[in-house]
Image (tube, rainbow, N blue to C red; front, side, top):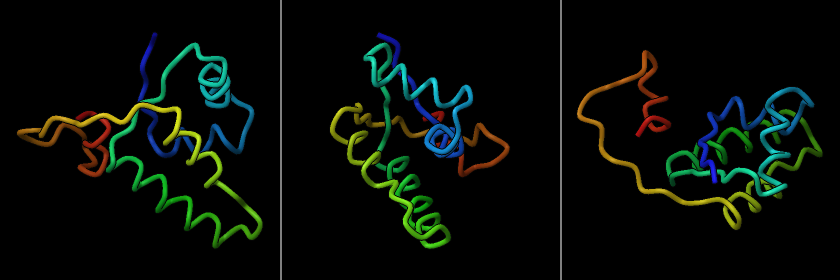
Length: 95
């Protein structure tokens, strides 16, 4: 099975729009792929989800986050010796 890690922007886009990102969540639902996340990635999903819920009343991202924590795969990333990405905050997705 293919295991993938979703950048936060891709994850959020997959929830809101029916574009290519949405098909990733469909493939996950159909058990064609496995979503993988670390604690740090999940924390970012939660932080962004809270910010979006404050901005857009009635929005509920946490039901999707619950599904990811139940059916996704928690990984324990390696410690990177040096930054890989131009945006150091994105290094967690490479680790």
